[in-house]
Image (cartoon, rainbow, N blue to C red; front, side, top):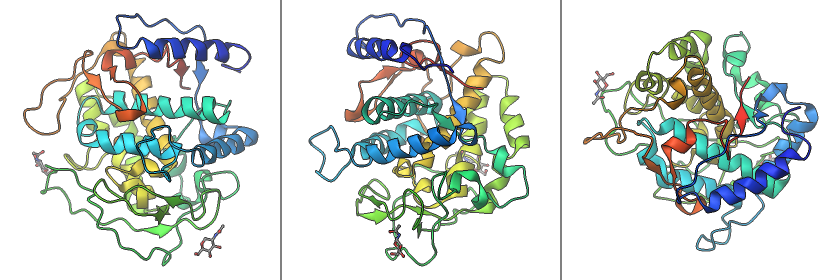
Length: 346
Ligand SMILES: *[C@@H]1O[C@H](CO)[C@@H](O)[C@H](O)[C@H]1NC(C)=O
Ligand SMILES: *[C@@H]1O[C@H](CO)[C@@H](O)[C@H](O)[C@H]1NC(C)=O
Ligand SMILES: [Cu+2]
């Protein structure tokens, strides 16, 4: 098993040192060992339980940032970071690097603050979407060994008007169907109280919501993924997986809208723990694309702003995470075989 034994402790020590000197002229070190990420259903039962326990642990720890209201949890600090960055990290070339870094910060918190030791999970969508079973029967939604089931209709009383749309979105796209808001009432996140959003301009206590929608299934199927993986350069690669609301629906939207509820919110979608599995699934496609041809590992590009003037993403572009973590340049996020990342995908 990769990444077990004493090595992780050594790596974590180096990570702390690297983090402190991130803005100085320091050169990242090649990892001595890589952790292998795993599809959710390939985790052992023990690791599944340990992972859910660690997520729930983050949801009970207080936020580190003392300027946040007292009820905001450590888990929700990642939501705060996403909300703050959202308008600058979607519909742009740095979409993949920014979400890779956020996912890794989250993984690190699960390990260092909540004792998780197993593989970090991802969602390999075709394992659900290529078959004939309804999506809501996915092992991801298992009440005992997953993230709990679909929401229960009629349990959400406040209809949110939750600014799900960023400024400048493309109004000529197919009409936006409002997502359903049904409370998740059983499983590990039953009646979980979320304190942020939905949306950036309001925060009210509400339940975690889902309403699994089959109409987005086609985006999660193998032909769509094959098309993404066949793209010849980074700019067309990120464009082919990140679509709405600037372009037509794509795989990224498919995962968010298939689950619906909180996961559809442009700002506060990390309220839904499945956010991280969907995004590590996207990170895995990027990782595989990066390793599929020489030269792709350092290839980056695309526009750096969703609205004119567009700019261009370079390795020197700094990405911000608010109070969650110091800024990181895109160049430091490209190769996960360098510290602090040290992970690979099957
Ligand atoms: C908006 O979407 C339409 C329909 O897909 C497309 O033809 C048009 O180019 C898009 N506009 C922008 C600014 O992306
Ligand atoms: C969650 O809330 C619903 C409705 O308010 C209730 O029926 C259900 O028993 C609750 N579930 C848990 C696990 O507390
Ligand atoms: Cu996002």
